[in-house]
Length: 102
Image 1 (cartoon, rainbow, N blue to C red):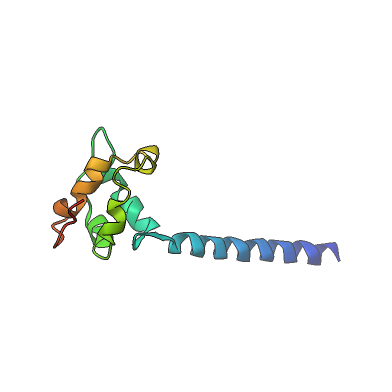
Image 2: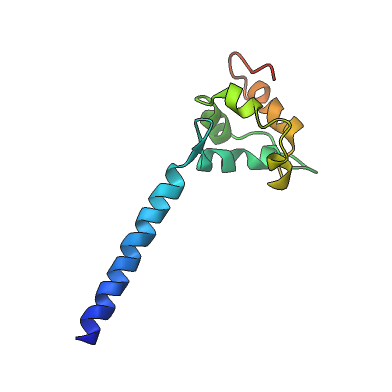
């Protein structure tokens, strides 16, 4: 009987982990997925920012830039290691049409 309970607990934990992973990977900020934001992080982190990758630029194609602009003067970005000035340059660096005017 104990073995059956142990198997049930393991299966339940596995299912919970999969659901948690799916939910966390589905989260977005201003229409940009968390994975997309992570793709852009090397391009917005000092002291040696990288050029934005094609994956980063692709993630920004559906971004709500008005929403993203609301983070420009927030302390949230610097607390995550993101330089707001570099972040605001991404649309231009990615050659996106109609870059925001924050």
